[in-house]
Image (cartoon, rainbow over all chains, first blue to last red; front, side, top):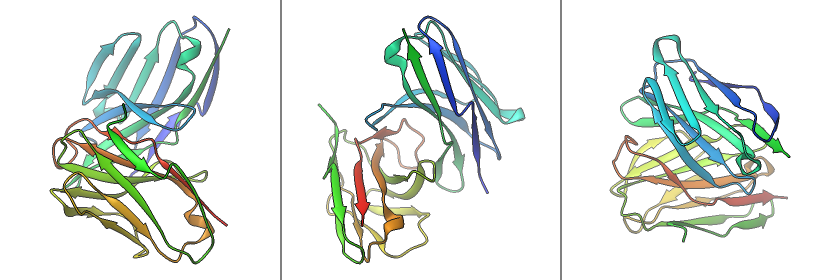
Length: 110
Length: 114
């Protein structure tokens, strides 16, 4: 079935360090989308990327569709970046569907 | 202000009972979805609706029934509740049917079945 694998499962950083989150997916995706899930549970869309590299603020998303992998780079991490980062592949099976990975739990400490 | 309202935020139910989760979106979107997230599984797609019509159903059990009384409403009725139904249920919406646009999520309804 369609699967998304994220690594690492968890990560602890000192404030100011960079993070590289990985996402591998099992089937053809129209794009990858990254979400941030707050400790309280709500989700916010960060970046949507069909292929190549996209930037917003301190975030850089890279998607290599042919190799079925993507990454999210967080530069100069801040304590407020703590939370769970979810990667979703968007597939078109007649209807578009998001298939989510289990997430990377990021904790940034002072 | 939250643009997707989910009610209740927390609920506790006994096995065998029935609950309805409410979702209203004020983004003017045409497509609405339900997702579920439990301790054991990643966030998983359940249903999608477009213009109040069911587009996709990935939920095997008929105990889960979405209900759309208005274009901006998509409630989820769950009958004969089981402890395995314990999860946070997220409502989402997107502008374009089919999910080609950005997906927006509500705050979630956390259900605990005893």
